Amino acid sequence: MLSTRSELQRLYDSTLPEGEKRRGKADIFGQMRAEYEPLKARWGGDSRYDRWFAGELNNARLAAVVTYHDLVPGFQALLAERGGDLGAFYEAVQQLGELEPEVRREELAQLARNTKAAAADPPQGSLFFRGAGQPMNPSSSRGGQGSRSRRYRLARSG
Image (tube, rainbow, N blue to C red; front, side, top):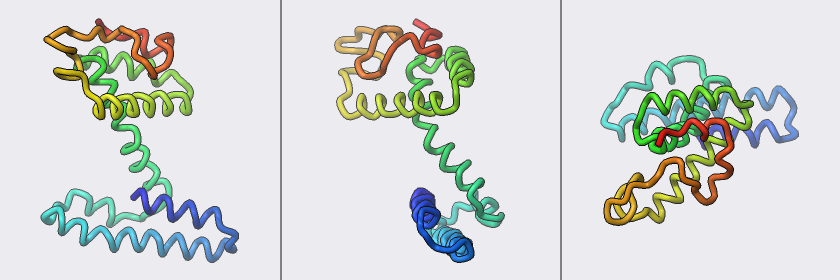
């Protein structure tokens, strides 16, 4: 789907006449649908996406799926930051929801980037414990994550 999004963006950015862009868009979505069957076969026939691909493929449906997948890592990192505490996670999500959409998206992207960086160079033990069983303080400052004054960070448990 990411390649479809990129192809569509190139098409929309082109200087082609609108009619050709519409035909190109239909071709790109047709290609995505055609690529689904071999992918499904590699998944052992998993049919959970059949209904989605059987429906009308359009920019809005593609954007919803891509946005969801783009944001999941940030939400996973937020839950991990809260030590798996769903109450604290929901409170943080509610506070994130009060931010402007672009700020919210950047916050989630930053959380995901920080998680990737931590995974590349993990501390001893797990994400929540350092060294010889010394617990990390979830409200401690973490380099590169920006100011703790961000509204959702103030709700950290710990």
